[in-house]
Length: 265
Length: 265
Image (cartoon, rainbow over all chains, first blue to last red):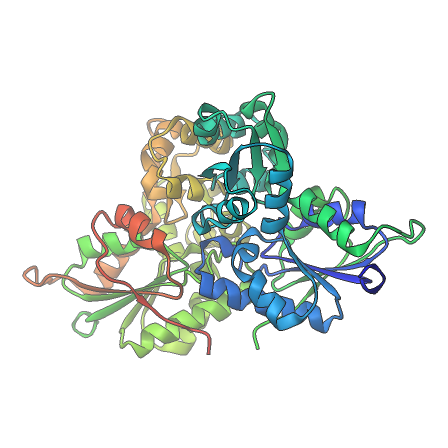
């Protein structure tokens, strides 16, 4: 498949998917990337599965029309609900953070796996069911952590308040002695330090953003033309001044230009 | 005008407007109320003014078609951007939380007024400009408090973490010795206790939800048929299990039935 993938589309409901894009730029640098943030309708996490599938198909169609030959679903909520529908309609490889993260969690060799994410991701049981499918004897413990996203967006990443919130959210998982903790939300890599310190030594932290990029690299194939600078286009469904500011922090670099689009047909 | 108002429409991007509805049920009990939460597209706070006006007009049209003869814009963001457009199109009285809250803040007799709200509400400068228009010599200090909404939705209303967040957000306003603090977000009445305790004695807390209901009562007129039980219908643009649970807490009572609607024409 490697020769055919030259343009990769990435979509998320907003900013979070930029952590996936950042890992893609590190691991698969010499491809064109198109990032779509559906900022007009974020967050997907509070919406119903039916609505999430509808929105995801609109995002997927937009990127397919831009000529992408691989689609990365960087939004956990969309990945939990819409990957089968996207594969069926678009006929290109679709990589979702839920499958990629679950595979990576199982590969650690752990048997007691904790999963954290937004309320909707946890309620969907998507990670839980995917991990159980891969490793039927895994014991899985989940916890919704709805304050982590706004704490990251405040930039309070190394912070006493974030540490207190993390201790409260993660107390049950610490008590269960999980050996692996899967970060099931693309915002969470930015507070990985706080989370790891609360969980303590001996707990492997698996980052679904990184795992997704690694899976894309394996699909795209080995040889990478390191000489070509990556070309990235950013599209948003609504102007968001926060995107450039917060997004720069997520991406670890400046976002130069963003194009507004309207998906509402 | 009093005789003509029999059905009041209230809309918000989600749950927050229920604090306004609760005050309306207390102050103007004998009217039919229709509540619309645009949960499919919440929050409005992160969206552009252009998009907020478009969404608000769709909400207003929906309620007008349901026969409301007064419209209450319970969403601060929508109130900041869309009230003129709604008045122009609907030709019924439109009461917005920004105007009502600003008037109430000015009526306290304070001269140094603090305003807190979501990032978008504060960036819009809507409260600031409205208060300045009413009292040109007012000194106004604003602060965006984006974590307050998710803290309220977690139910951490009387909580050490919420108090720490409040102390950090409000430190500047305390230091400026504001004499009045306007709660410019419909979620904030649920943490009024924490906020008041951080601000200290001598600071008047003005709640824009209550102020809005008082303004509606004044417009609707005095005589109230106390014998009639209030009739409320709830409409949401997307199913939200959280609405019934969190909403019950906001409203201080059970939400029995909710009807899903689709505004996308």
